[in-house]
Length: 111
Image 1 (tube, one colour):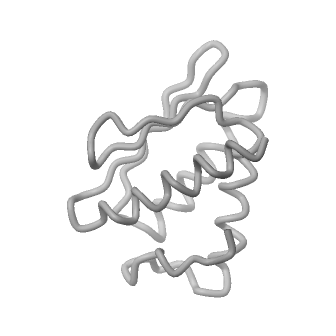
Image 2 (cartoon, helix red, strand yellow):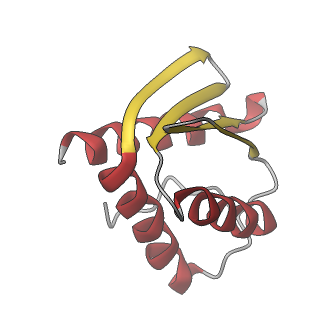
């Protein structure tokens, strides 16, 4: 998980902060991921187990990620027991989304 070479040049998060941010995402996925799908080539759909505080945690990460990686479009949909996180990108960043999906799936499998 420490290899962040797949992060695109368009990411404005300082290089030294990237492993910390990635660790936050991967910790969330390891703790909460219940399903992952790629319903379309540019769209990743994640379901996260909900409980008090999880939605706020997801929204905080989404807000910070949106600030440095404007190529991502995040949609958070809270449910009764699940929080759906949809992540979309444009064609230029399809490889980034695919890499994120692979790493997220691997993180979820380590549960």
